[in-house]
Image (cartoon, rainbow, N blue to C red; front, side, top):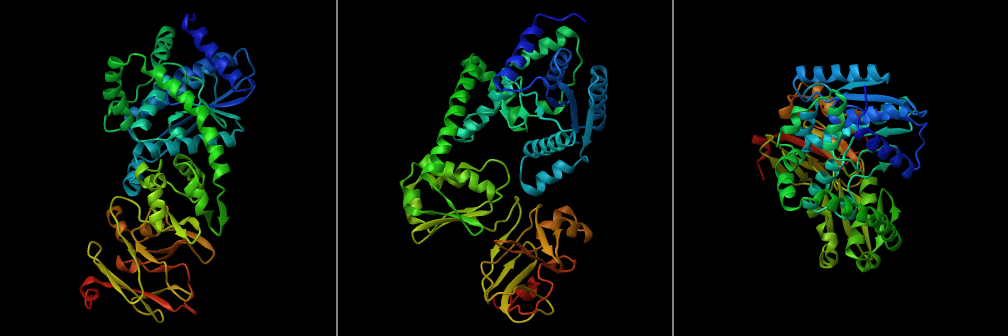
Length: 468
């Protein structure tokens, strides 16, 4: 089939991308291939390069289980045919239909974020198994513009406004400076078949709403807005590493147990933006999950009065920043997850009630017996909370890790009822799962109650409310 005038230009851009990033044209490359126009063009262009260079290509396709079965089947049929015609080995994966929606409901995270997380995990594992040095994705200049628009309105900092990097480790995006319209012309000019994802027209997804509603307005008001956003991203991509290095130099957080400590004088003297930047790598180390951290959560770090006046500066999302004498300490904290749930700090000899779940609880000194569970072998039970469960909750018992979600499945609890199961936890993790409240068997991370002085008692709310 004859080529078009568009092909040499696109091929030249990919060659310049490889040279610019110091990448070898003899590398083993795994291409994320969905059958859509962007990844279809990327695979075709890389396959063309592989005919004249020792580039080794493989493709990976993940069915997220989000769309109707017939549509997904047609996507897979195209992906298989294209890979066979290009003589590119294909690695396939699939998620159970409904899995991502359920995870999104349980965690309160967006479906888009979870789908991206599963996709990247699948690509990474496939690349590991196939010894691929690069994973190529078909992101375009349009994806970059949409990302920058969303991050700007979400209050992103310098790192976020740097946009999608054209290379991060082995993840590469050779078409990031190419418009989607150019790729469509390339495909149509060569008569190359591709699939359109029907969910891309659903404005309930934020990126789709930006593409379908906001971008047309911006094109009318600022016809060159994509170039402007790309220039902005280039500026911040150079600025972000400098600011991160300055934050690390001026704010030398030091490890303290399972958390981090810094002199209050150093934190207060640093510029507000650097205070924020110094936290990001520490938060990742402490396991903060759930996508980008909301600006409102970190806002106290920008205000000196908040740092000076508050004993606890930040609390939530699994971490706490507190003042301790001449230092600030960043440490793990206990939080509830999801849109529906509870979070109760348990104080000795005081009874609390959770009417939504139909039970009450109290902590007392004594030995475990009927209706009670030994939860702390130490001298005091604090800090201790009882909270609703999170999907990732696990408990170490008898030398092995047990998932709380698996326990709920064994107890045959409906998904809509699992949030009621009381999780007893401290900063180090789950201590007990009180299945007796919902018909399962109580489980504890301390099978032997020997030496335990504190017992958590759980009772039906009718009896438990007496004496409140």
